[in-house]
Amino acid sequence: MGAQTIIVGDVHGCLDELRALLKKCGYAPGDTLLFVGDLVAKGPDSQGVLQFVREKGGLSVLGNHDAQVLLYRSGVPMKEPHRHVAQTLKEADWQFLEALPLWRTLPAFNAVVVHAGLKVGVPLEQQARDDVINMRSIDASGQASKRVEEGVPWASTWPGPQRVIFGHDAIRGLQQYSHALGLDTGCVYGRQLTAVVLPEDKLVSVDAKRAYQKVY
Image: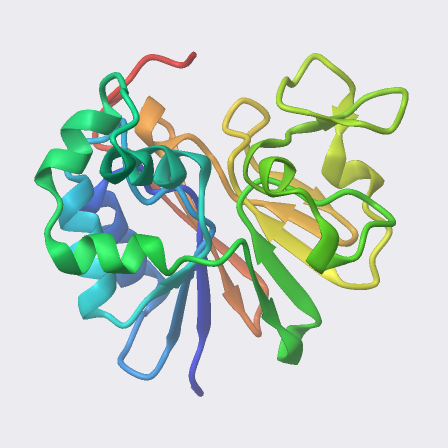
């Protein structure tokens, strides 16, 4: 089997589950390892996840919780769990987080990876940062919303042809549309950690060891 591209949903500090998932995916050196963001916060070992991802040469996009942790160095007051996470990070972890882009394109698969979503009709370079890392829905007026109840899943409106692979929406869980795939299956809430393995387009999941946080 040739090299794989493994795209992993929201890890949120769940290092044991991440290790188990990559083993189940058949991860091997030479595979591309890519994350949809929210590597940190809420779960048991955010620093361990960052160190593991760095050591594996993994790539990621910026998630909203990653962005919250980054505010710590700016002196912005913050609540738990972000402050606790920030206080555990090493300099290499900070450098990794600070370099995370809002999106990564995968030309070989005609795909783009973002954390939360994209608005239809807006060029990638012009997408609003807040939308890309926070949106869940599109309301009746076509505006992005962070809330599940305020509209329809944004991914259900995405026409392609470029496929968007994203995370963030643990409430809705796995989302499969013609041109969009949502991978946040709520591991940190005691559900599952999920990845898609390309080029086979195979979904792989492992169960959470326990619920680390109540569903909000």
